[in-house]
Image (cartoon, rainbow, N blue to C red; front, side, top):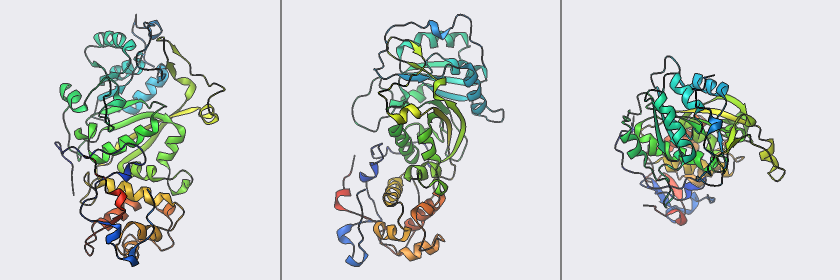
Length: 399
């Protein structure tokens, strides 16, 4: 079995958006459309802790925030903080290192440390830094505060991101050790997805996991995030939820064990806007109806699977797996055998027989594990010099 280790060469840069599959490097086992015999061509579509004395978060300095005009959601309920701690810190779990994203007033931070965790707080808003540093001094050095935005670590797009932090530099400075993929969890990440960029970040983390880059150079990092209910339903969907089932669902469930741990009303979270003030989120009449009716945030745990990588699915060819899934779900109601003719010159009937699927099987009949089995079966086909088809417009290589 192929196992990722530390020191992997940096992957080719891919877009973190859902259309990233169009820009990838097709190595051995791929063929140009024009090189395929006419008879084999098909239409390939485009693709409740107690607050410490003197640490009332409502007494924070009220100078303007410099993190931008977008307001951020913060966990300020001791009850909710205690609930999160119960999920993250279990007695039989050896991993007690938690990286907290944008802790703000530090309610969850304090609960984690009192529960026995060592916490690295990455806060993007300078308004909260003095408060967090003071909190760390009172908690016996178990809190390390860094001014940076976790959600802008190791950006896949080009350009300068401030404050600029490379995860390798950050974690090396903090003494975080690398664990092989086959071993345990090196650290846990907890936070709230920013509403503005949630979908892009969901795709970015997928690319990071499959390519073993960013935090995943250090092993199977566990993500624990509050996210909106609609995206949660899409990530966890399967053939029993056909309307929500998509490539995103398959990719996350193949990569991770996904658990919905808790659902909390959106009104439970305070938001921090300009002026340094915490306040309850309000729905405005001008906001889209979907946003007004989105009343819940889901606390979801993503634990990378030990058996994610094999001899046929690796950080080297994962982008081909992404492409296969996106192409399949472009015609989600089509039969699998018809989509296979568009994707590969390998005999579709033989492939279906090997993965024990019928000719009448539709894309939305396939479970995530079935798609992984399909990809690996095509990859290990020895009777064909090329495994995948692509058009000339897909020859772009990003270096």
